[in-house]
Image 1: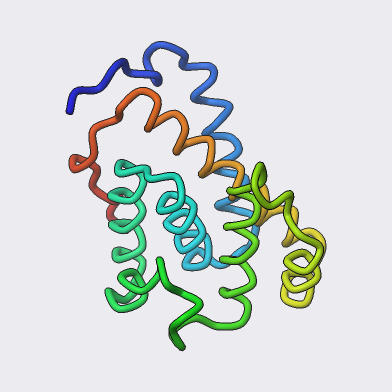
Image 2: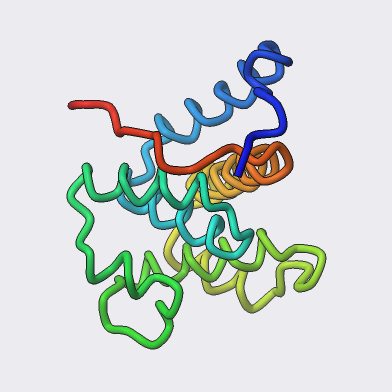
Length: 152
């Protein structure tokens, strides 16, 4: 696979805007592990190989287990995720598939049991960010495999 173009070099101001949203989500106070699960799940739904590669590496670097990463695609069928994580994953799926689901009231009511209003907006902004990154990476065929997580 060959990348179509380097969107970061082509539109640096646009990339800075995306990075601003990413930074906001990262510093929102939501758990970093939760944010990585959300990024992985949206990227699975969207079929974004680059983002799956990146966020599986980031999740592992942050201490996520292989078992949970492997089971993420079938999270409903496992005991590996907390109720808060399950609510976030259901919300992620509904928001990512907004054209299909229109984000059902039941999903909203469920996630509201586990997230305060600001947390829910922040979670939604994180989901918007990863869906945007997925669309950039898929559209321009960003090649997976070379990403290395930052050293902490």
